[in-house]
Length: 516
Image (tube, rainbow, N blue to C red; front, side, top):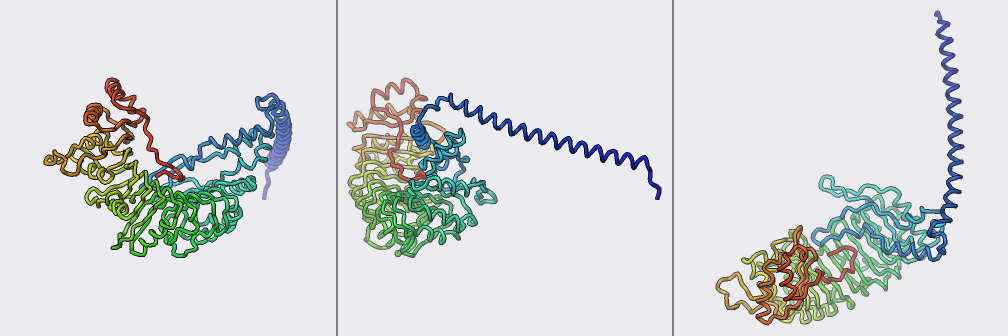
């Protein structure tokens, strides 16, 4: 075969050029690496000298550590920022959290050494995924990089300081033996433990891991993805003598004690009572909590057996009763008929059955002072006055009433004042034959702004004047600053002459991580 000599020589020449270029490139890369190394050294020296003149350079290490600790207290936790009601209990999206300890430990070498030496900067432990993203009708929690490593690192840095652990949105494969052992190993110095969106298949292993003494645990929350009943009296066997707050979702424990014996605040959501035995277990469980002060309960179903055995909770002062969306509101009315709370001072209701009100016994709650309606569709217009008036007569001696309803047409301030005047939607009941004027002792009315609107004050001065002429003791009105600022000036002047006006507050205790 004939070989072209000129072409062969050209190929060899090009190979040599490529080798020379590669060598030159390698030389340049080495020079760049050298320049980068020199730059890093100069940058370090520059930063060190610059930091000597920083405002914080003369602050003692122990003082700077105290500043860091104060920063943690004011940092908003994205896990807790968005509160949800019982009826819309779903995992909410939240931003990627920036751990305050991580933040200050990356400012300078000195700050990092101080931060790493202070275990109290690393007591908020987050084991979470991003989420949720709704796909095909199901919530999906995408992976958050390095969450395992971060949790392990922060728990190690916390040493023996009391920690707050948040576990949320993890999948079944995330609950590895190593991860469960990590949590178990630090349960002894865990102060608060919140576990949410737990896959059903993971529950037995998780509960087994929690069967460890937790002498510092004061607040515990557990929410499962699917409802589960626990007949085993050993449900959650950890010893927690300091436990005062418990929040259980989609769980029906057969017995609420002894692990919850010291609990003062209890929330149970998605509770299913479908038999006489279920009612008896709920009754015995609640009555066994001798220190219970605050009870919030939401029903998925409530079965009332033919029994005279009431649920007596003599220490409960705050009670919230709700029913899941698309379930009969009669669960609320029936449960109130079955419970006896002689010390109750504040009652909050998310639903009320207007068609079958189930009248309560007189003096059912003899010390009740405050009634809160939270998202009840009642008192929607002047044709609906009797429904709200009938509810009012169930709780005749209250001194404060709060309407916190998002529906603009429900339980407005105008409707409330009308029923206090004894007005009725029944033309044949002009003389108040249905039971007298509701709420004769009411002193304070609080009304929240409806969704995307404000409280309408147009007719309020006239109604208040009628109440005062009738000798009613109402003396205080709680409405939002937005309602005040958007109201007509003349109306506000007239209102201020008639009644005390303060900013709206529902005055409901919030011992739980998620809002009611």
